[in-house]
Length: 384
Ligand code: SOE
Image 1 (spheres, rainbow, N blue to C red):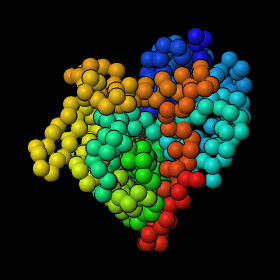
Image 2 (tube, helix red, strand yellow):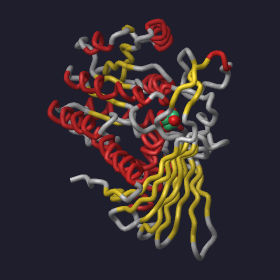
Image 3 (cartoon, protein in one colour):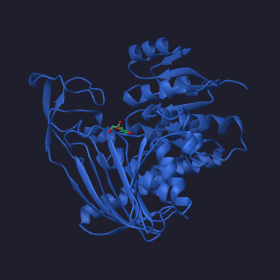
Image 4 (cartoon, rainbow, N blue to C red):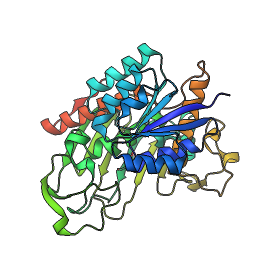
């Protein structure tokens, strides 16, 4: 099989996660890195064996050798770079949120379709083996009819007003922070596992810190703990530290979730709990190989990831035997493996989240923002 050549734009926290996942795919060659800080691009190209590094992404898109690109820049650059990449005929993986508005995301969906190019939005968290197990349990009717869904995506890396990251600058981030950055993962997972769609939302957003101490230099995601007061500037904040959302689903389920980056002690706690007429399940990203199964008339169970015990359709998402943990990095590998296989085989169905899924999350997000602004319920347009 011909090695597919790929390029990566944006070298922050998640850019590096993409680089490492790409390196794990045997038939994909990391070819180029695009990053305005050229020293960083050169250093990563050296470390990961990329053939070239460019400060200007246009120089990489012009190169006919490039088959696909990964867009891992701050959110506001997702749309312009993904659009140019599609226009240049490249297949695109784009980090979430796909864009900063529904209109932009719709344009990307339409363009990818018109160009016949593979497109992926990085809602990677679906691909933990135990999340796939929940999906197949629900499809097989093990939970019965879904009544209640609840949970949270809670982090603490922005708890102090001295914590800073580009996401706190809405010009780079877009109009929503927590709900766009992590709430979108929760809603994507919920819709993926239940097969139901969120049909209306009632949201309440809170910005606890009206100003924060912005460092005079750049700070990496999850990495701002060592700054001194004299290194910072007091800066107004216009995006939410936390969002709480009540929702209804088109299959009849009701529920609620929170997304927060100020919950002390929660590092990366996506927790999802789904209860049906027969049984319930609870899963927590901080203990990814465990699935709690709740029964009414028999003892509850903790199921530990073991491919030989998973539902047949969940099994292909677990590469290692029981007792060998699979985590955050592995979810990217699962997505990218299927994305590149679908480039190599044009007949393959896309078994990964596409731009349409990124668009779906922006529709939910815009409904949440409208609901918060008007203090009331807002319907979410359902996919046609
Ligand atoms: C920061 O909140 C972040 O890196 C998100 O951007 C990711 O999507 C999430 O999976 C982990 O946290």
